[in-house]
Length: 135
Length: 345
Ligand SMILES: [Cu+2]
Image (cartoon, rainbow over all chains, first blue to last red; front, top):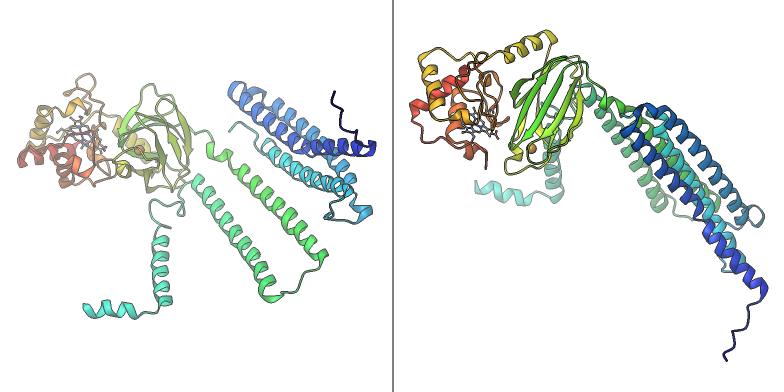
């Protein structure tokens, strides 16, 4: 009978789980942006091709979707900002390879991704605001 | 002269560079005015696109100067390390805020002018079909039940927006009048549309802008914007049946036209129900070809010689053209035919 490898220490495990989670989390803001983009594209295309009369409703729905997407991104960004913890550590680049540095660096990356996702969502909404017809 | 070639070699490279760039600049600038230039707009849409171009060009120059100025500054003027605060600020302001605002503003500007490009027309609709290598043109005034057929020339009433429905015969073409607006592709079996709004009477040139075969480059057309009253008169004249010339040469020419079977491909509309020719539709309608401004889709002028050259040397003028060259015709027949066609005003 083979023996299992010795179990990892608990703190190690917890930390690994948390890092895996925040690796997931850094993708969430871009994913929100992508979802918003695909939704806008699909709704605009289908409404303009099939039922132009519904356009005002579609615009309203897309504006609501924008509000929702921005709220989600803002929330993710805020959590990432706390994870980065720049305010208290004053460490901007987290150049040291310690566990804590990795943790904070993932927060830093997530903040930047949230920022660009928010810009993307706003840009994606400009046509909804500026184009009042299907032309 | 041998001396001059020898002298060229003595010109310093920098001067030669200067000379060739001056030559290039002249060539480039000569495209800026004239009948087929986006930089000399004569239509509302082209004006908007022209403004867009200048704004983008101005912005690109400013950005280029800023980026290269900064580069120059940190590599030549101040080589000392920048403070961390300053560098971070530069990244945030110059790398995040500035581009976001600039791109956002350009995007908003671009979006705001987009609907104009597809505004609906004021009444007149044209239907243009791209053929190899000419343009089938139909005019549908508001409420018309049948089109007024023409070819290879676009006439529009000035000061109004006309709707243009585009289609293609066998391959893809693209309809473009640079001085009046943007271009739009033409697909076999799929209608696309655009609208144009010439601001004042004028005269321009359009060109097929999608490679469509051997004579693609020779697929152009004349464009004329006329005062609305003149346009109405012109259109009424186009609607009327052909008025064949009554002089002896013209009458003989009409006989040659019938004898050579030109009517298999071309239509010369006779008075209502009394066509003297079959109504061929392989080639351009010739009912009023004598009043057109070009032959062979913007390839030749419309003098009597041009007519003769076209008929006798079609394929030499336009490679692979779908009209046989009638080089077997006697000089007399050719000149009679030219008289006849030129007389179809
Ligand atoms: Cu073409």
